[in-house]
Length: 97
Image (tube, rainbow, N blue to C red; front, side):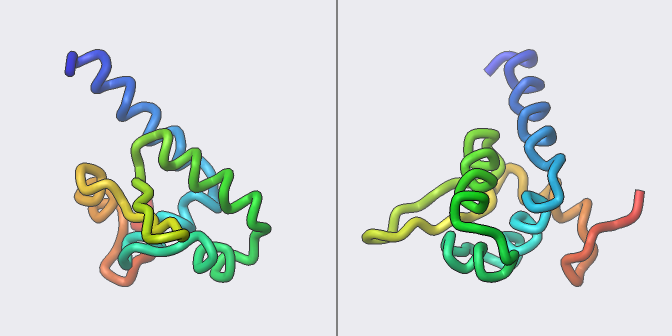
């Protein structure tokens, strides 16, 4: 992968995090894999809204979807997990800038 395309992918990943609901999804995913229904219940968002945010994060390479029978399970991409851990405290809250 060229340096420019790597930069573009990082830019897309960080841009996808520019939404509070998506950051809430990432917070939850930092605790481990989760199904769409669990995200919906935890955030109080509609199913279409949750699907929209999950697909934005997936397209940006922040998370990946794994098929488990008829259900999808989402997890943080391992290459981003270290970066996200640096941004978060031990208790899962965000460090202050």
